[in-house]
Length: 340
Image (cartoon, helix red, strand yellow):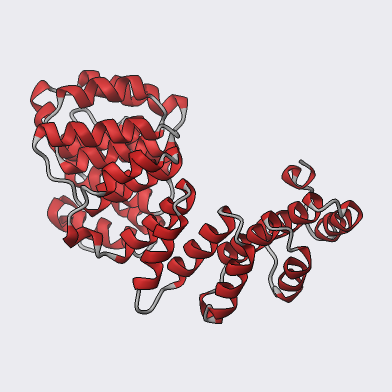
């Protein structure tokens, strides 16, 4: 490339972006180091490139070289910090947020990125302060709900939904999926019914809602409602079959779970399906049936072994359970959950 091109920052930024997207970090770095004038767009291309190539620490190191980062650069930094989610990155997030100009606080994308980063770092006290002072949107509510779901705090998810209505923000499909997940975790039938009635028909017909509701009603003990939803589905998919098998299992209906499992197209059956059907057999005392299924599984994961070992242990087949543990440990390191 002619030497004169190294001063063409728009061209350099485009080239850096291309090299990084192709995974050629070495050439991107060579080009970047040869450039005579580095702009924020070039810094941004390098930071994003490092992030996309799983080199987060390099992206953060580069941020420290920038004298006056703009909003785009700061968003990239917060995204980096969210991926690492360490004490050091949490401290960096707080430091940078304190130093940014006040007019940046009106940038919804920036505030959304810091919310996500703080949640992933587990700093909910700071999250609440920022969220309470920012302009709300369905996206910010979604980020908050997702954080509370991961923190096993389903009640806060429902409180946020009620606050959304007060703020006049219309919930979308993702919000309702978080609501259903929260209700599944709480397991209260009356509470679930009161919230589910609020789902608009246009959203309630979505397959993802069907899957979530089958799981929720199974966990709240209303098996009939779960079955009703499943039977209305013309061609159930893999997730719907597995959710229904799990609902049977949770309600001690192992025979029905087995019947549905055998109706399920073989191409739909995956690790989660095997775990759900083995659990269903375990909770209904169907050890022989569990053995038969387990023996036919060609690729047995750690979780599948653990589920079968639990099934045998519940039925007091301790020697057989130990043999499975020994079999697993012939090719793998010991797993603590298999002994609990």
